[in-house]
Image (tube, rainbow, N blue to C red; front, side):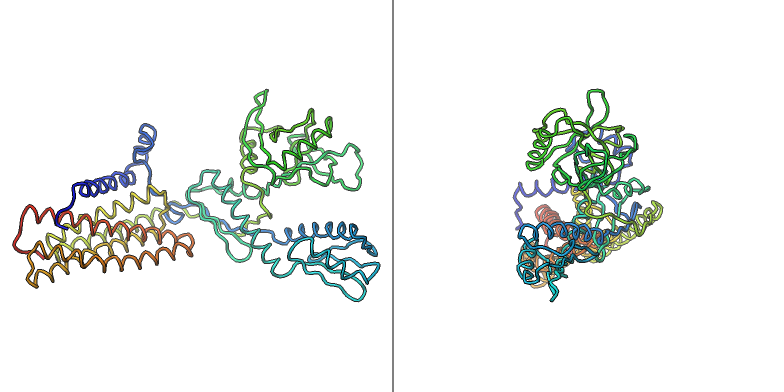
Length: 519
């Protein structure tokens, strides 16, 4: 233990140096930091800790997903499927298949076919509850379990789409999480004006491609939708059934056509490419409407078969609108409309006050611990204080490298770590003092003190790490921030207490060769 290998000494010193180097950008002025990022290579330390909503201000939004409309759409689909299924199995109904808010019903001509009807309808999709009565009326609805699953999927998909859309805007470390059955909290650090984000989220971005009806009169299987204002605003009659749907898109990017006008180039998956090839080859000369959120944004004419799986959306776009459309298509369609229930902003001044309070708390805690260790353990206390400063630098270096978000609870985790960081040194120093009092030489006392305290230190820190891992796994937002700083602090404390202070103690023993230990 007393003889530390040269490679280990170099590794310890290198780790300490890198810790100070990668934490230093957090102390630099913004202008200096920008100059470093512009003029220095990427590997040069230039990252800082991201501040959370409570420290730098930002926007807090609460949105509600329109679950009833999703269930209504699903019931529309079930109505069509029931009608087709009964027709395929030659089960006739008295009148049309009726649909209400939460169920589909049909009265059979022959009530004796009720069980056969139930059997075939249940095969339409899982989660259907199919019942009948003595009159032969079939009632189809979703089971409670299926309704819960639909709600969960809508919220999960909404969160994923919201996250992708927000990430595309460059917002760092947004906090997006579910609240209750049908609501989602969106916290955006650093966003002072959330209107752009709101506009982005309010667009459902459901895209589909329909053939334009050549007959100008409405007929079965058609619908009328307005053209975008940029395209004249006049309505068009199009086929109700979509030939291509938005979920077949795999990528979308902004580009420019031959006339240097902004366009959106998109890529289709295998199924979409085959279907697009078939539709385009069979309908050369016909118009093909591109529908986004119940509005026709473009209606080009098929000039030739398009079989490469790539196509282009053109219209009266400017660069900004083309970029936003490409972003929406890449992020995917929201499964339900979002309604903004609550909106509030956290001002930068409030965040600055929180940062200042956090700084004061950290400095007071650090100062008190430093003074206590020197008063209690003298020379060894100075070694522990140096290790503690290295520990704080390592925490900020890791937070910067990981681009983690620091919140007010995260600062609390750092303050707690400062208090806990010297625990290992206290255990080691007390053990060394005890061994020296029992008659061991300084060299032997230090050796035995470090080796025997190691097991206790590892057990204590391991339990704290387990608690931090559980908090991170099950916590949200600020709780995760606390767990991250606590977990990183435990790991850096182990390094500084066991490796850094031991290096100082060993160097002192080898150079001074003392007869007693100053504890």
